[in-house]
Amino acid sequence: MNIQLIPKSGPQRVLAASNFVYTIGSGLHLTAGVLYFTQAVHLPAAQVGLGLGIAGLVALAIGIGVGHLADVYGARGVYAATLVVQALATAAFVLADGFWPFVAVVCVAAGAKAAGLAARSPLIRHHGGDRPQEFRAYLRAVSNVGISLGAVGAGWAVQVGTLTAYRLMVAGNAIAFALCAVILVLLPPVAPGPAADGPRWSALRDRPYLLLTVLDGIMAVQFKVLTVAIPLWLVDFTAAPHWLVSGTMLTGTVIVIAFQVRVGRTVDSPEAGGRAYRRAGAAFLVSCALVSLSAGLPGWAAASLLLTAVVVHTVGELWHAAAGFEVSFSFAPRHATGQYLGVFGLGAGLAEALGPGLLIALCIGWGRPGWYVVGALFLLTGLAAPAAVRRAGVSRPSADTRRAGRSPRDCEGSRPGRRSRV
Image (cartoon, rainbow, N blue to C red; front, top):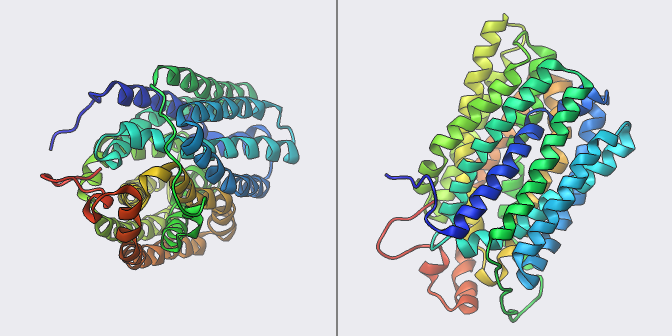
């Protein structure tokens, strides 16, 4: 199975380059963003979790509205605007010297991030070829290359531990977002699609799609395990060296870079997506159990156990991401990609809103038992996903065929003559 290292399409190259630069900045923030506010700004971890939860709630509705704007007015300009706002909000982190200033800046940053993800979806679908899910998986692999580079810089900031080092990290993050917007100038604009008959906000009336959104959102809390729970657990509860915060992030990103496209291509139908969700839930349960056992061990043993847990967790992450790409695109009408993917982004917004506080309360506040509760939550969500996918598939073909003028097989994202997948 050959994997294209550089896309053949010019627009795909521009999107990949922009995404790469963006995720270098994201790697800085994902690895040490929470530690910046707890270690440099000296906010209590509980306040940081609460602030991130408020920001996630703010971001929930923004993604839907901006996704609809991208469908109606053109995705490139809307996406670039969200990046500029995100860059300015991230730069303002250095001014957040208390709880409410912190809440203000993270709300703007989280809202702009959610809006950008929704606005980018029509670009991916338009320039992604016959199988935009495959291009989306490729972008995720590229993302993790950028994140790994950002994680190295974040590891330096965490090891040095000074306010200046953390502020340099924040500045690098903001600059990356701004450069990402500049690169988008090279991308051909996507003309807005024609208005469709029927309710304006059809995605919000699509109950099977909303159910999938909720389940994916619960599962998406797993992303905060690596960026919130494990860094705090490692620093406060284990004897592992602090630089391993970057080591855990790099381990996960290398695995995603190497295997996301391959795993994605095996998830080539909504039904396969349901099964992938189920496997992901089981992997997350095992990973959470391993993390809980790292407390109280010698440094080398704790480090080994944490790295093993990250490997298992990342395998689950590969399945979860591939499942999300498949069901979100397969069940979204082409004319309303931004709106539908904006709604599906509510799941990630749910994770942003509830994930940090939930994980801090259970895994950090409660300790070992909390890790098992979180793992069980992931397992149960994965077990529920296949039935939700079947329910969405029953109602999907007739509605999408009327709107797009395609066969039910085409509406499932299939392509004649080959087995396809992300």
